[in-house]
Length: 478
Image (cartoon, rainbow, N blue to C red; front, side, top):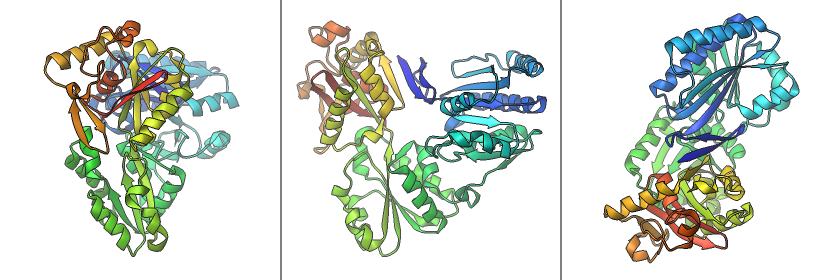
């Protein structure tokens, strides 16, 4: 299997199927002191990654560190090469492992093109400069909190580490605290929810991998409500999650524990039963902030919260768990629009949000298929490509072992059927060497087994659908 990530700097391949993401870090030292600080941070990240930290530096993430030095500073470049050899070659082999790499790169000057590329290519950028100088350097390239990289500024002697930009969604605050810890420096965090120890909806979403709909507006509204001491309801409908193999009680406990870490934990209530949730909405008499975690696309139809929002001062933030894998098969040179329109129509039919798609999965002969790559870039974090051997082995194993894979004929009906009962002739658990799919790909089938392989599930939320040049199926990761 080959996993292709969609990163800030474009497509990047990862062979290790456990890789959860790619984190690109740029360190910008301008002196010997700041170079030593950059090296300490690099060594700390390597050790932290190896020991299995969570968050942006999860042990499953691939971490690439680039130390940028101006070409004219020959002594600094030489020193960097020598120190890297001492630290990494002797103490921390290998430097270029499957999930960690570090290198020294040079640049002519801090030109507009160079700085613009930094912003577009790296998740985190560390400047070892005066704060004011960095503000002037980066100001032309700042977009918004949803897209900017995390920017950290560290002084010449490594005494203070300041989180300057994209502290929450971009992970700047967490990175700054870790960098400060490696240096023995003082972390400087200025975001209001952090300094007051209060809940922030964007950090909650980042922690659990949720997509926030209408993010720019909702982050501002809900974090303000948190600072003002308003009440929050976090709602998940338990019946919605049983089809994904999730340990729901454990999941709820994890969400509760996160809320309990904050000084306003008493303002939070978790509800998992639809009838209780509807009753609470109708009877609310105080400002109420609803955080709904759901894969369902049309929530208003079920709960009618907009109907009561003006009368009862209700504000709603919808968080989408990135928990669906879409298996896709298509004919050669199938257009992106055809892929998108078909998958969108199926998701509409099943009342699922495309914002819940974690990734796409398909057969490896489609690795250059523009329509699939573009769809994966727009809706997922990565695309998994499986060989025909992997697909066929998966089908044979599950068939011969008597472990009939399951499919749901409909999310609305809410029941499962075995492969034998569905009448599907060439999918998930059935070998078919006479199909067109086998003739053209060598695999018994594509969309269903790829969705199951990538999600590590044995149950489909959506069984094979076909229209025109495209087939698709979907499975849940949790």
